Image (tube, rainbow, N blue to C red; front, top):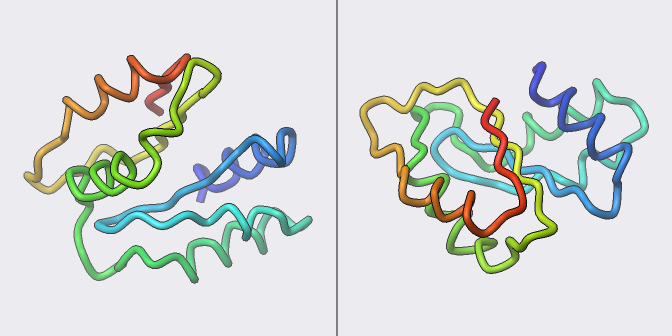
Length: 112
């Protein structure tokens, strides 16, 4: 839940410039939930309603590939990309190639 609060604070400060995504195996954009004025409600609703398949295992390969395919072309030198994750990938490919691509396309890439 800590990551959700962190994302909420950034979104609250820059509401029209920040997009929030959640993933386990699948990736889903949850930005609309972060428009709620109550941080706990925003985070809980985003996690409850995200289409991310909680029964599965963390899969950076699938999530990063989904992000790249859908949003990779939007990254530019004004983009700050925060990747907040638990680092458990369950023997799936870490897709370091995509992390390098994100780092080269965005102004900054932060891994937390």
